[in-house]
Image (cartoon, rainbow over all chains, first blue to last red; front, side):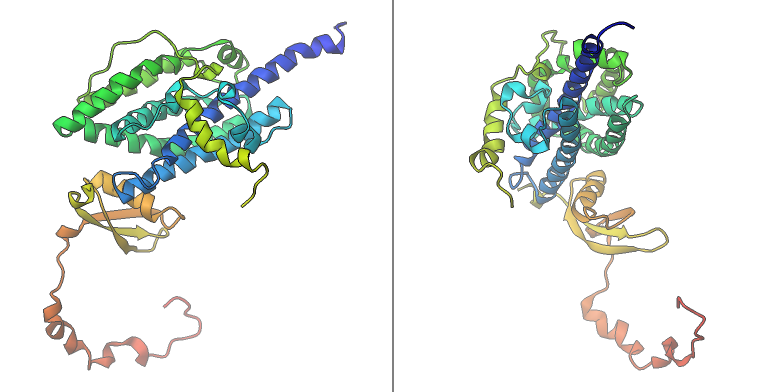
Length: 264
Length: 95
């Protein structure tokens, strides 16, 4: 090859950039969902549920820390997990739009959780075989946690869906409202395709049927009706968010931004 | 609060393989599956165990405190039932 080093390294830099953004997307989905669950602290319907939601939240924030740290290294601009979590504005967040949706009532929280748990089950299982060993190790740890999250959320889905008239109606309402954000879960863009070709990430269209089958099975058990497909994909993972994320970040980031470098 | 509706469960944890399950406390849950999940979330956050049992508190048959004298007093003067009369060889570690 007679190409100059600069020319040769350009695709590598592009690859690394895509790699970093891919990891950041995973990190942000976990972080934002973890923060949402933390908002339940002290407000859950029972003491036991308060602890359960806090445990889920801590698992997700733990995943986010590992992924953010790695994303920061891939980015190569010296940003650590705290800088990425607390010093970015909403358009820089690359989480799934579904993750940032407000807690609503317990039905909304459960449906949101269940949809994302089922998604993470497929993603992390695929990432366990990633050519990126570090990402594979993070995914293996996260997968164990996610199996429990899914057990928790699918249990509640069935309990409330196949519950009283009111709980069933609330669950169907939450499902109908949140379903429009699911088109994004398995819609690949250039970054996903880039990662797929490099065997870093599983191909999203191949995972979609597994997710869909699991969703149908659970909905059947919960006696809930799957809403009609809504083709419009939201673009949280490209940094285009609903208005809810900004409000959430304002609360989450308030302290470190008001007192930079504060320790406790 | 739903806690008034949910039945009470007693929670037992086996801390290590080979050891027995020990009672650690109680919690409220709507059903057995939820009780296991709550027990996991409330009582095993710090790696307290490798196995959980839950049982509805209402299903436990308890002795009547009013009968304590009749049930337990008769054992009081039978100290010979304690194995302290035997010399234990030094080689025996786990007795």
